[in-house]
Picture 1 (spheres, rainbow, N blue to C red):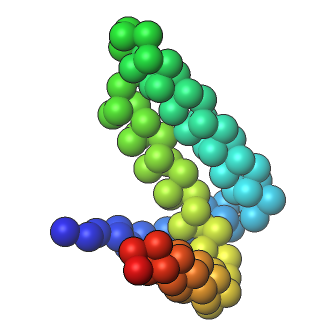
Picture 2: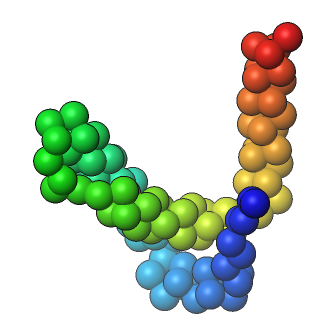
Amino acid sequence: MYHMYHIEPELLDILVDKYGKEEQLLQTMGECGELIAVIQNYLRAIKYKHRSETLEDVIEEAVDVFFMVQQIRNMDPTGFDYLCTQKILKVYAKAKRKIN
């Protein structure tokens, strides 16, 4: 089952209005960096058979990034959705070529 959680635009507007667009973009960079770090640690934990990071930790950081990406989308929903659709169509076409 597919779920794409909807965050009310009003909430996203409040956050951008409170902190500013530039600050929220910087925060997005930080959240992306945290996701990269937790994935690196998780993969090392699997490779070396120790559990310093868990899949739950990865998911938690991914949710933070998802929330920040929703704020970026809210800055230009039409443009974001258009580019998203274009990317999906490209990936679908590429996958279809590989299958055939």
